[in-house]
Figure 1 (cartoon, rainbow, N blue to C red):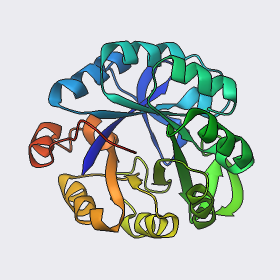
Figure 2: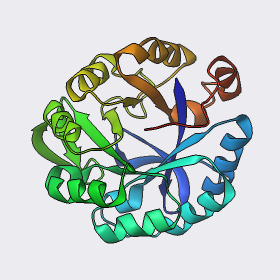
Figure 3: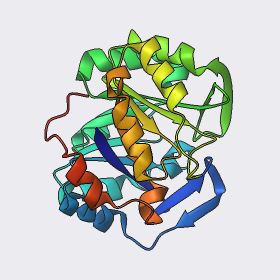
Length: 247
């Protein structure tokens, strides 16, 4: 089980949202770069980064922060938020980002995604974010009317490395993840799926680990870490992190 701590960046700072609501952002005092350094010191091999400003179309001011994180830690970095053009793809690859998470563009222009996969290889993850089974895009601010299962089927044929599935209604709530829906996404897509949204305890991680044979390969942990509800060091003793991860 790969445990992936999250660094969500808004206005250059670490934050957590609840159910994707920018109006209730909680700012934490940790600098994103120092937070990444502390995760690496504990033995983390992979970090999940979301550029919240770019996700809702408000510029790319956090790209410099992402560059500094890259220079600071050797971890695999997966980055999402506002990747909607080939220029974005090239810039992030040039900055040393290992995996690019595609959400909005995956829904609006799947042909571009297929073209990027062909051109740049196995660098892309499908970010499927849904509320009540409906995919939402543009920083979760816009509905699509498209079922998450349909996007999972599309992702299967695009050549992406895997899927990060988030039930928005669970995200930042510390109420526990949507295991059932995540397993369904894994079954439908046939791809490795990372569980995201609502992880609240070490018990949630243990349950996710029990579902590895059903396609759940990792879990993203955010608010539970920042609110000290999970002891990351003790978890990593139970689940040593692989240095090489294909997805």
